[in-house]
Amino acid sequence: MCYSAGHRRQHGNASPCLEKRSFAVLHDALPLLFFQFSRSSDTRMLHPPSLAGQRGGYEKPRYGITQCGCARAFGLDGGHRALAGQGKHQGPLGKRQGAGIRGDVRARRGKPEPAAAAQRRVHHQERGQDQAPALRRGGEVAVPGMKALKALPLLSLLCALWLAFSALAQGYPVKPVRVVVPFAPGGGTDVQARVLFRELNEQFRQPFIVDNRPGASGLIGAEAVVNAPADGYTILFTTATLASNATLYKGTMKFDPVKDTAPVMWVSSTPLVLIVHPGVAAKSPEELIDLLKKSPGRLNAAINVPGSTSHLAAEMFKQLAGLSFTVVPYKGGGLSMAAVMSGEVDFQFAEGLLAAPQIRGGRVRALAVTTPTPLAGFPGLPAMNGILPGLVADNWFAIYAPAGTPREIVNTINRALKKALEASAVRALFEQESLAAVGSTPEELGAHLRREIDRYAEVIRKGNITPQ
Image 1 (cartoon, one colour):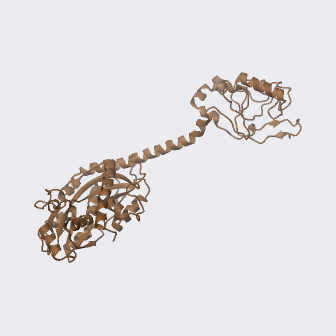
Image 2 (cartoon, helix red, strand yellow):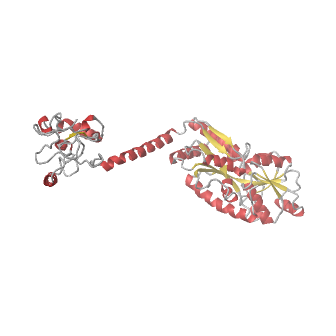
């Protein structure tokens, strides 16, 4: 059907077109309606078989909109190339099939004489080509705004993605969230994660499930997270080990800690405490140094995992004091603490989170802290920095998501964690275990991670530390 003004006699046997005013509202509301192309029998026309070398009959069907002189009804003329297509409009009554409306211009499918073609070009230029078919070879059409129309699928896709991400962030989480802890159960990271994410369970009414994935100094769990879908339903709760692993496992790591993670929050930090088994004949850092020097290689030290802050603190202790002792790695802070309590190893730089209850219970003896100055949470303990200048170390805990996680989801988790840090149960744990709450922004965690990578790299190179 042709939607235009006119009379049947002007268009051969075509139905009379409707006037512009009949479709004014439709034109304003649904302008794209007139650019929807359909394939039907109306898009086929006869061409005359009268010219030598040409066949008559039906032309190959084309896609298009029937176009005639009444295209002005929809503003498709006037200096622009009009919508074009083949139609079965015929010329005035009495004309042969396929002839043009005007007698001086032959049918489109005919082969015009040179003079007639020239005359038609001049006429179209003067009249704005309001009746000129703009059909190019192959059935393509030139339509005002066609470039914009071609961009519509891409724009629609972008809008759909934006709406999907917005809806995802607003409804997050709609299912359980897996919190990967890359260390064994019972360690400081595990204890803190369970108390912290219990608060998020209450906030979102969705379970945040702690999933312990120990091994390879935290790399197994971290790798599981960076390879997970970036949808916020798998996140990592880890320690400063992620920074030391960047140097310790350089060349063998299957991911980049900076590029392949989305920082969420630097949650907290804890000092390290130098502890010994009660059977070790040392009641101060100085006495332990003397004992190690008198019996080099006889005593051994437990470390959480290779490359952990407990490992780096032990290495700094060895470098600064000129000592020799054996380092025994474990798969987490809980296991290494149990080894010291049982006498399997002699001493350790343990996380304050794990050391505090064992110190109070008399199961281990504390000698010093690794903070720059003494801590109120460990009264009476000196700072190692005052005995061996430069021996400053702490363990920090942070949360990451896979790279590419929508920022709206990262912000949602960050806000929930800040609220959780104010919960009474979390504050009680932090006070009891000498944890310092940080609650950083994602940007602050990213900057801190890069600084720590550089700092630990120097210690690892000096100590010639390698994966065990």
